[in-house]
Image (cartoon, rainbow, N blue to C red):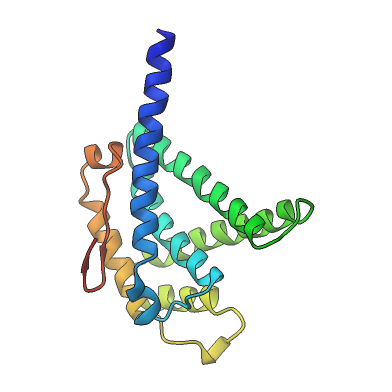
Length: 181
């Protein structure tokens, strides 16, 4: 019985790692940075990974228990990566918790604002939220993020059609603009 528990945990970890790698790969696709207005910076990559994860979480909230567990473990992996990245940038141990709290607040704030726009199927509202979050200091001078909003709305529609088995095996792939991964 005990060995079965450890085998199951290892199996779940493999699924989570596979799914997290696929989601991260989507967020790192150059077209988002070269053509859709996301800045290729540390914060731009944080924003892009956040929105890909938000799309995945919105899909898994209706999943069976297994899909929701995978989503929670992916959240944990994401914040472990953020913590590691902060430390790599030279932030000392004293400053990490403060930064982590701020980034977690940013992530959950984005989840709320993007969900509101996606629930209303409002491309303009979503583009405005993206612009506010990705370019907080630029205001009106920020690039038009309508195409990124279009991609998010298309990706969410695509995710609605994903079978539960695909979720539970960590095999979800998102099409990217100009093709798929």
